Length: 232
Image 1 (cartoon, one colour):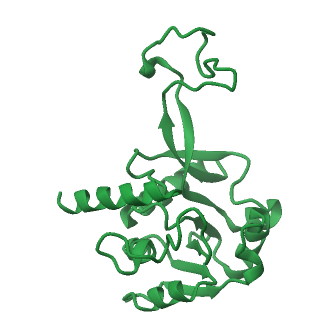
Image 2 (cartoon, rainbow, N blue to C red):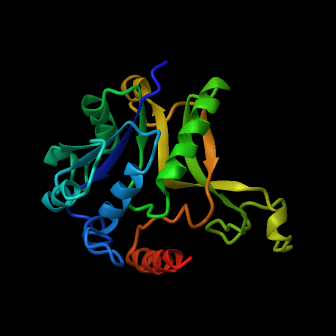
């Protein structure tokens, strides 16, 4: 089995909820979240290449200004039709294997600023073990143990229909997709038009690693966490 892994990093112009979230300054980084993520990825030992897929001229400028001693970073200009709000995820998934030839694809995002190069290496190592044990892909998640209510105000994830308030640690553990890692063989993209197979392994990350910037408040809080972690 070819164990080469490509990291697919999608960045596009026109983000709506957080304007220019990938390229605007983040804390002390003038190149923003994109500069941070590429720097983290270049520190990985198990990623063979990093494919930045973008139609954003500023993203290309930032990427070209980052020191890449092993020439792992490759910029692919993505067609504008695959960079609009109405683009179906299935269309982007279908596009990915046309620009990546390595046998395994790790799809990640700049919006997970606390996943480091060494974290991706741990994920890849676990992935090889999971493939050997019958799984066909891997998905990163964070554990969730708290009360969920349905639209009628009923407790969704407790055996009781009333508010008995068991300890949250006694509730069943659910898992939330944190969007940090989708890792699968390239042939799954081609054969199933999906970035995961039918039997994915779950790779659990803590709350900070799982931080995902989806709203302006997320961006502001991520900057504060980043500044705090720098001082440790």
